[in-house]
Length: 98
Image (cartoon, rainbow, N blue to C red; front, side):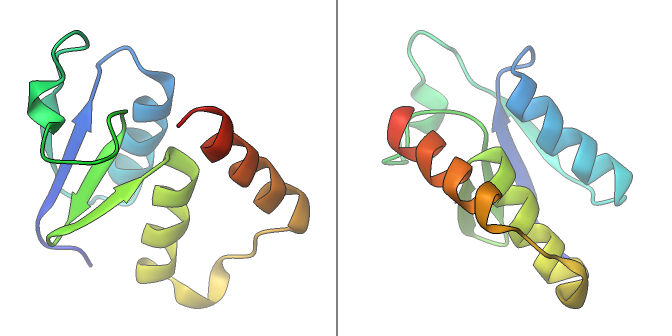
């Protein structure tokens, strides 16, 4: 289980809500850092200037679907199966919204 988890988010962001729901469902304790949508000063340290950003034990994770996949692999490595169509969609999201 992850020990130090920090979620950089906008409260109204649906992708951030998705990550929070996953963390809550799996009883993973985490801290929230609310990011100012105009200045984004809270995430200036990151090359990725969007939310959600999840920092788990010092490792940065981005993109809600990717965050959930990586955490699922840490929690239950054998149970995560991602089909080819979902992989294509994730690549598309990263390219279109970066």
